[in-house]
Length: 457
Image (cartoon, rainbow, N blue to C red; front, side):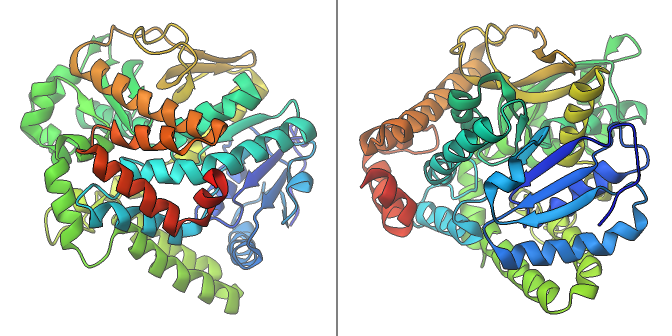
């Protein structure tokens, strides 16, 4: 796999979790003719050789349509992947999709939300993932001390905050849901997916768009007051248009699990499969077929990707409409564009504004300075600079404080290898209604996840 000569030929990108299903989207982004920065070398790292082979076959299929494609190599050696990298993009899944299904089912069996990143399932995910990520961070710090570490590993807020203990300001967390919300809002009002200014605040998978400015004025009130326009916003349909009007803000779609928790749990428990179980079956079929028939891997990947995106957060839609996600949302740019824009701004110095997971500092008074928040930032050659935002008060601040306390307990439990702190974190989570249930949750997670046995002994 070779690349064309460009002015930025020296840029190396390491992708950790290189056998992940969405990795080809990153290759498409960095190799696009209008990519704002040219990457000459991509190193894919994964511990699963079969997944690496399948995704390599997909990439081979898409390369002919990418004249500026980088040289792509694959390895199971972490040091080889990250050495001399300018950027390290990380999207790993410790325990695989099988681990996700256990996270979901353990909680659901106890009548609690079973979801990948929100609630106790997300905490179990963090407990088994953070130790691995801290080891990876130490290797990156040694082999590529000047690299920027772009984290997409979930739960992204907790993992990014934990990584800061090793990498400091050289790590940034990304997510595609906030910028997707902003684009939908602007598009609904103006027909164009851009806003000159905006106010978004939260934690990862827990935030609110509180204003966005187009043509010199805040257009959010106009959107909230227009039934037809509001009906085009996925988040408003999921949590209810009356509720977003009552909030006076557009919530991140994951707030559905807080605002409609009872309904979400009932809906997920009524389905034959959880989201994790659906993806486990879907991806098992994809990887098996892509490995046995590599020439058809790219075409298969395209079909599976569309089905995957169309059914995203299906539990928030009405029965019979689970796969009826708006086509524009399915095809819009996601996390790969956020990652590319960060790399371009840091490399070229051309400023870019986006919503990122970064150190709080004084951005949100009422939260610890060293914690990670999800806010608008400007990125340039000197680094990442959070914007000043409007004060955060009332239930928004209270919910952020509550969940942030949980996240910090989880990080402390990993760093101190203390299961009591993990129990406390689960017990005080807003979506867990009993300390006794929290204890049972932790005990069951320790039974089904060998990683937690290694962590806590």
